[in-house]
Image (cartoon, rainbow over all chains, first blue to last red; front, side, top):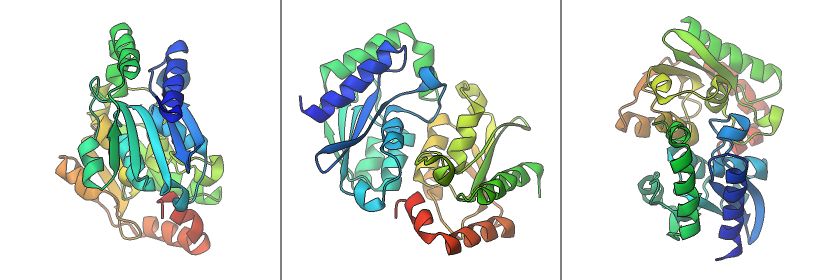
Length: 145
Length: 145
């Protein structure tokens, strides 16, 4: 496990401990984490702060040159909103913990030239399965279903 | 001018008065505004709260059934991130103030079956042109350029 995916998993685990959707993310610029975050639906009542969005928000305002030299790590396949944010800011590479519990807009990202690296990580899957078993209605809400 | 686009323009104008990027939006469910907002980059240092996202956030947590019976009004063509949020939540229709100062991911929305209504409104264009003239660097940052 590299340190960046581990940091994203730590964020997801923190979210689960808070009673939230366990999806975490970190934005890494030239080998350094500049933003970390996790899904804030339960904790802050947010409908826009998915894990990836929370990491981007916590990284703060950045010039395009920073995003274009960054990698986004996320424990779960990015949904259409998060994928749109990745495209907006021109982030060239995304490392994905798993995409079995939810398959996001990976095709859209790939078609736009974003490099995707899939880890199929058992910890990421277990975190999601635990939450979906406990709170299927919250998970459905989080993905607009 | 219908009341909903006017409300979105009022939000954009409020943003300009605050020194912010003048893009406003309202989410309308069955003829009633349930969320309104405007771009928060300058005001709150947010990289995710574009006008549309701020309106969605201010509408709070909603079941999928509400989004699927709503219309999003926005003064500017929605960027990839905001378009992704529209797709995530299954909002079936978007009314767009203008798309001359910035053309967002309209093709993506249309291909996904979202109904788009373009107003080409002079007030919306003037708000954006005023801001872009004053703060081209902030506008570039807002669209990842």
